[in-house]
Length: 193
Image 1: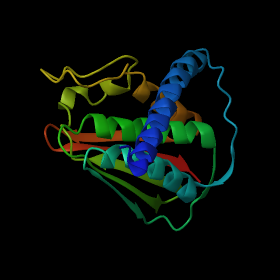
Image 2: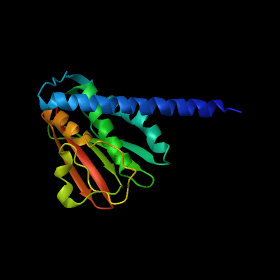
Image 3: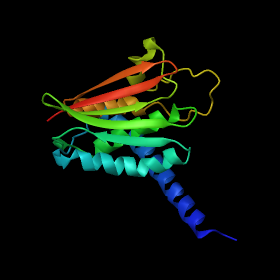
Image 4: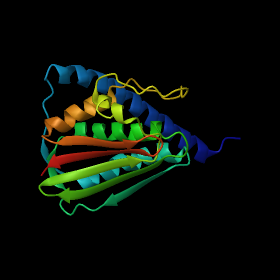
């Protein structure tokens, strides 16, 4: 007997995975363009709150599949910002993907936003394995992946964060990471309004 709900659920999950794979491939292609400074952002006034909601809605399934939670806290009162929707969404998916990957047990991920001076700030935090202090700056280097001991299930080609950093910098923004071993990590993105 096939349970139509299950079929629906799994076909959705497969779609999600396909989307992710497609993004990985796009990342690799984007990265080589980025390195040749060939990526031109298409900036347009965007409701970034809605953009984040869309991204987290699709990502929530992946987290809930692991019995985890993804929470949102929108504190930013001004959220219409000139951004490149495609690349910013991609960057956020990379950060969420990381937060999920590096949460060995049930992921607890939080996305929050706020306005800070003339910046729109997005924070993505997890309660995962965190990282050693000396690796905090290295993680944005291409192909850097922290040696995670015997955890072999961490998939990924390590391109994600160098891509994210470049995209945020192309928005004239900055990205900062704060992390503590076994406590989790917080990535903070600041984009000028």
